[in-house]
Length: 316
Image (cartoon, one colour):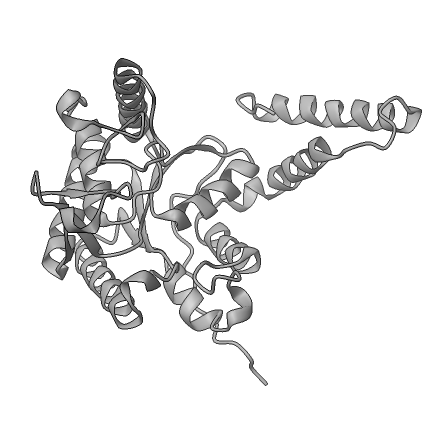
């Protein structure tokens, strides 16, 4: 008896290995995959401007980076003793204006360098619902708890999203034609928008993405993380207590599918060794000075030195 619907996962090329450079941008789900990649020490740049929920926010930051459009004083604002920008997450901030501008322009330069040299770029879209700041008539990445009356809520059309994604892909192809672009829709449920509205939002994104990906399935790929959550893991036991975010079990299952689709099987022994080292580094000894623990530390150091000979850029 079958108790699950298994989503077919296609193996894609070129595979990710320890020489690959991976950029991950988008909603909070991209951070779940990013954390898994970081844990086993792949080379990644993950959301340098924090979580970006909607397609236009992702487009804006990629466009800025690749077109050398630095942030200026006109792009930032002061609130509750800190400087912020509407183009990024509220976690990116500073108390000093110059320090903040230096920080975000340094991040922009880092993103550009990674985009130009990346082998794989992962984009995860969370919602098609966006907010327009009435004062400037610009879409924002984050509302910063500013009163709702200062914004207009809009739903991006399929055409809006398709046009935005096409622009991203054109920019990347122009600057880094060898990069493989993996696009996915976040399985996180944006229920604050409403149940029907969340499904409408996801459907707009899925339709737009497939319209664009079908035009070039050689360097642009769709990974079905949303479909896995909705069909393969269609039970509340795979959600956190908020019934909105996938729990650790769900994230691990989706990660294993991503691993199968995109990561070289040759990395498996390295991933296992690195995971063992990471686990060892978290170990808290009952007696740090015991002979047993000193031998454990010596063995851990030996493992680290051994794998660094195979993958010199690793840092623990």
